[in-house]
Amino acid sequence: MIRNNRFRYLALFTFTWFSSPLGADNAQPLPINIQADQAIVSELEGLSTYSGNVRITQGALQINAHEVQLTSQDNTVTTIVATGRAGSNDLASFTQAPSQKLESIEASALTIEYKVGEEQLILSGNATLALGQDRYRGDKLSYDVTRGIFKLESGDSPSDRVNLTINPNSDNPL
Image 1 (tube, one colour):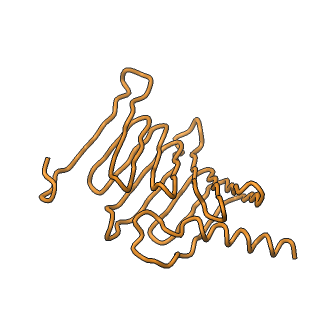
Image 2: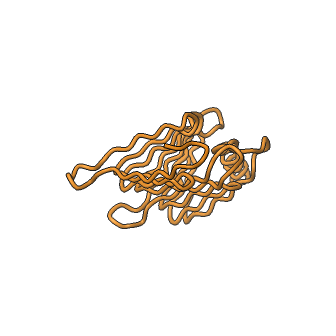
């Protein structure tokens, strides 16, 4: 019975965390599929950790990482942190297919943090972001989805510079 209650809590917990993925067009929450080698859920701390080849999907949203931590408050996820494998080329990735509100988003970095309520994506460590046809790359990158504001930072090495490729379109020429 305890195991069954924990499973129900885990299902409720994970179901509420992406109740409104980036720019979602629908009002109904979509089912979430989580695959991982291991899952640890702390009901008291509001922390859920998935590790080992983690893949999370919900509708058009997909996260792939070595480890994903979800922090919640009042049964609603507030922060998602996805990490790749340090010391390797195994980066975390975040993909959101296009919707009526947003262009497609593809992000990868050693660490990806998504602040759910603020709709803010923070990438660090070999960060790349593709928004539609535009490309952004730097050591650190933050993207405020609601306001459409980017901040890029270079790495410590003089050769580490931020790189941007912006494609003008007829609606918003440069």
